Image (tube, rainbow, N blue to C red; front, side):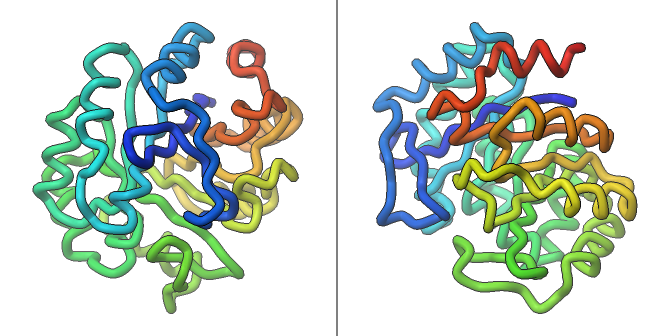
Amino acid sequence: MILLPAIDLFGGQAVRLYQGDYNQMTVYDPDPLHTVRQFERAGATHLHLVDLEGAKTGRTTNLPVIQRIAAQTNLLIEVGGGIRTMDTVRRYLEAGASRVILGTAAVTDPAFTAQAVAQYGEKIAVGADLKDGKVAIKGWLETAQDSVEDFFTKLCKLGVSTVICTDVSKDGMLSGTNVDLYRQLSQKFSLDLIASGGVSSQEDLARLKELGLYGAILGKALYTGALDLKAALKEMEG
């Protein structure tokens, strides 16, 4: 199971939101590249980046930061946040991203999702943020009509191979991850499933690894020191 340390970008800085609330933002590093290099020195091979401004506006506001990170590290980078057009997909991939993540657009614009997958294949992932049994969209402010199972079935039919699945209620809470959710999804769907939200201990990681998940995203637990990235990576190798 691969581990993907996460950085949320806002104003060119590495930040974290509490429960997705832009009014409750903590700046962790004015220069995200500094944090990325720490991740790389610890042994990370992958990086999960979210452009929080892009998520709100659909613009590639933090593209220069992402280009800089891609150019100055050897990490495989996935990027999400407001990716709603083929031009935005292209710009991120040309900037050095290995994979781009479609969020709200994967729910509201299946034709765009199908086009992106047809053109770029495994370089396209979908971020499924789950809230009260539904898929949350538009910065978690709304939920889609489809059930989680129906949405995942549609993704499989579109040819999506990788899904980053976040339990919104767990995100940033350091309260443990929703293992039951990931067990159910991994048993029902043949997808590369990446767990996100609430991963806060070696025990969480061990339980997710037992499920055979493709990956797990590490966020707040790294910034607070609840998890040591180097030790976590070593545990995954074992």
